[in-house]
Image (cartoon, rainbow, N blue to C red; front, side, top):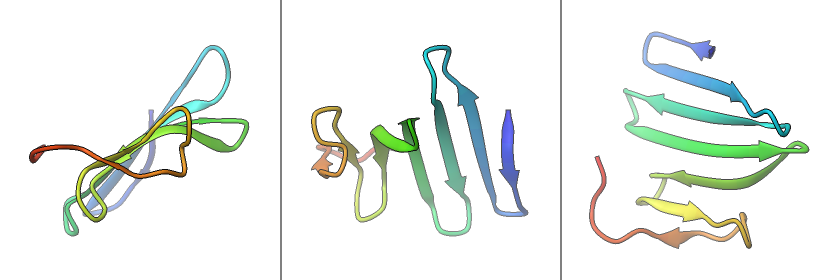
Length: 72
């Protein structure tokens, strides 16, 4: 479902049956794209292109692991 929308950005939120949700965000003006799995108000896993594409892995969601190559 659409959670937020503006003239240049959109945020989608999808509920997960085991609890929590998945957020997907894109801002056309800044080129920012981000995905996150959130459970108990904490990011469990994520990926975004802020500072280059990277993931926030399951074993340490605060860590930034760079992804090789360029994603579009």
